[in-house]
Amino acid sequence: MYRNYFRAIYISYKLLKHKNNIAKALEELGPAFIKLGQFLSTRPDLIGEDLSLSFDYLRDNLPSFSFDQVKKIIQEELKNDLDKLFQDFDPNPIAAASIAQIHQAITKDGKKVAVKIRRPNIDKILAREIKFFYFIAKKIEFFFPKYKRLKLTKVVETLENSFKLELDLRLEAAAADELLHNNKLAYVRIPKIDWLYTGEKVMTMEWIDAISIYNREKLQEFKIDLKKLTNNLAISFFSQAFIDGFFHADLHQGNIMVDKNANIVLLDFGIMGRLAYKERIYIAQILYGFLERDYKKIARIHIQAGYVSKRFMIEQFAQSCRAIGEPIMNLPADKISIAKLLGQLFKVTEDFQMETQPQLLLLQKTMIMVEGIGKILCPQENLWILSESWIKEWAKNNISIEARLAKIIKKIALQIIEKIEQE
Image (cartoon, rainbow, N blue to C red; front, side, top):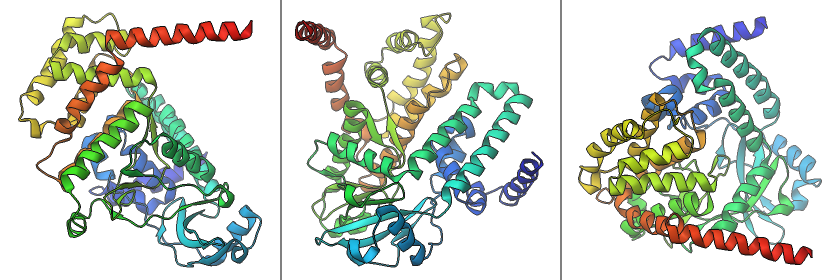
């Protein structure tokens, strides 16, 4: 117990020391706090938009661990010596992060691969820090009841689950495999997992030569059509989020690349977003409502979905939606921001006692990233313009009366078939 209090004092000292650069303080406090900062960058509702954006630049570039440790972990995990598994293995990592580091290698059958190895004892370090986070969250909720709405202990639980996903590299491999399986776009590449060389502490995947999508000069040097690339990025994001309900939610400069054929290459699948079908319908209806400037419809959707209490009048909430929508929708089309629109909407819903929806905030945060990349690649293009027709088409196929009837008929037909088969 007392150790937690001493730890809190030490952390307070670090935060005060770097009060103008909290990200730096978290970096100095170690892997768990780096991951905490990266997680909080997706939760502007908790820490404010400015601090959330500052954490976007918190990257876990840490000193690497020794090659002897790498060999030991691979031997224990894959039950064989390194030189019997690979014909070549670069002892120098190409990246060293808070959870793991990555090496380039060539398998015995000549395949070029990237091998991700988990840091020694990182599971024990993170488990210790999670206990401390729970301690702090419970103290805040006890002494400051007004913050109960933020569900801080629930946030720590979500962070703990995120840690578990990142610690077991088989789960990250499964996320990559699911994204690859879902992908139907020819211009999006997801590395294929080599399951024979993958375990809890080691993950091996296809090596893809590519450059960062943020490297605009190099992309131009390769004569890549930046307008088309921006359009492909927008479509790939909306396809993942709205068609599959499973999207890459950590699109920083090291995780989104472009190969020489202008294909988008996604890497690092530790932070993924998942949206249930009803949530996809909800967001699509909201965006469609703003496109049509039908604010009563937007208000009705919130109340029907149970996000806003029925005790509030539709007209009252619709007025707040209009106050958000009109200033944004009256801007020139190339200035409209979907992420900003949703961000303001989520802030207003707090006044109507809408509970925090972490999955929707993660979607909004990823939209910010995608819009930001779009501005770097092609400043004259806009995610809203590129996606407007896509959203309308998706809405037509999924939330129109005809689409709903088709789904009901299909459901009834499947039930009849199932009943016949049972008989």
